[in-house]
Length: 470
Image 1 (cartoon, one colour):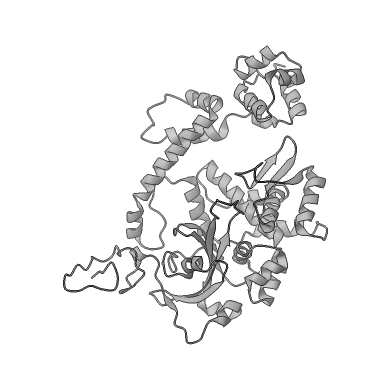
Image 2: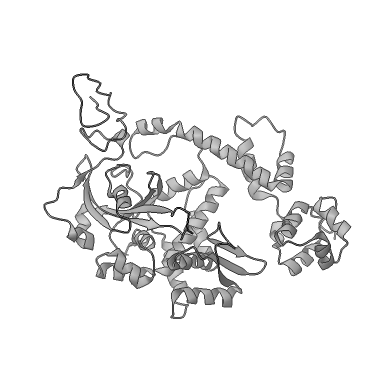
């Protein structure tokens, strides 16, 4: 039988550099000469099956990674050069394969530049999207994978039945005890993975890193205890609930492999919350506490953001909770994530009004703000907002602070502790979907003129708004 020859020099070099091993030391461990290893790394000699097995046994290298084509970078480069602007530059894939193999960092740089170009092109189409009508999907055309994922997840229910069932079945197999320690013990016993909390100076830029060579999961000490638990639960979910994640992934219509990779990670984070806050126990506690998030945080050892997000997932057909939706934004008004029990209500709620209490929350960090908000069409919502703190920051570094808004139909307010606190005589805050789509006159918070009305330029009259319109 003819032995298969594999040329994977750049991959071998990256493995060696990642381990901080010299060519001489690696050659000695593999039983070959340093000059032969040098030829291998320059793709002038192949990796034989014997050498592959030796690499796997000595350095715990993933054989599939060494034998595979330069898949991720190559697929992304193909996407870049498929653009009409570049489609005639290359006669075939050979040059792309060589770049992806020999210079993966340069290939990633090309992909990032292309994505920045596409993002700017998409921003130029925002006006057309607004004109298309509120709540409608973005105009047709190429989208960044992250934008595609955001659109898909925002428009569907946050309940994933297969993941919930798999998480429950897995949870009952775990022993009783403190949740973080139980999951650490499972990783050590079942997969041989130890968990270690690393100080800031050792891992300054990462939340979590799994080193498959030493079989250790590193977690940053900058994370709060609840966030450390979630990162450990993400790793457990990826390993133990992989089949359920794959099944849910197949139900989503995604156009690129990178979009699928992003969603796979998002589903793992979803499954992690399901492990931290099991469905039946969490829903029972939510109903008993009238959905008081601070009480749920104390009971389940989670953060405000984790508990609020989990509330949007409680939509099992036979046993559902209040249909909440959620939005997170930063102080500059960027909407970082949106979702809900039935998807995010783009058409009716919008979420782009500066009068929403999610923006007022930044003026009162750590305080829970609850109020009723009414749209121009008369639909009203209970909105609950609070700031969220990011990873602990050392002295001199600005803390990452965002705000989260949890909302539901105003008809459900009496089911919650927050709705009961609203004064019966307090009028709802008059909001709109977004300034460019809102036709409320005399709004002191208006930041932009509506695209549906001409500006009211009258030298004799000045309205309350900075953008008067006819």
